[in-house]
Image (cartoon, rainbow, N blue to C red; front, side, top):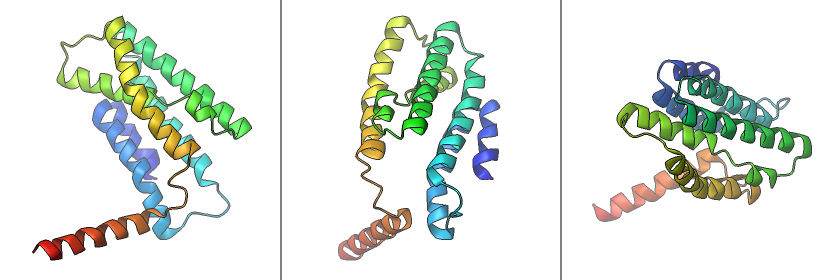
Length: 175
């Protein structure tokens, strides 16, 4: 329910709403680790649908932007959706590297600029530079999560518990 309702805030508060949607996307795996996920549903497919839902709401907001950021964001969204569709059909994880989700960080950048730096205009040169800057960490994330699958063998609640215990041990040693 949270993954359906929280993203609606994007339409009123694009930057904060998208951050809330991303947080809900991040937290849902912890909730499912604790309470379980229905076995008759494939989590990854549901997650991709819900990610596409909140990004589609972002795309609605994009249509209010100036021409260059609007066209750029729309193209990045379409590019990612082609990749997601191709991945769903082929199950080839490498496609997620070829079609990285640069739409989301670009959206956050432009929403942040509009909110906090309204005088900063994305020119063609600035847009190209920002896309390169955003692409580098996004490709690393796509590689680690979707191709190398480094987190597939971890349970979120176990990782949080291990981190909490490590911090607590450190605090007791220092104190």
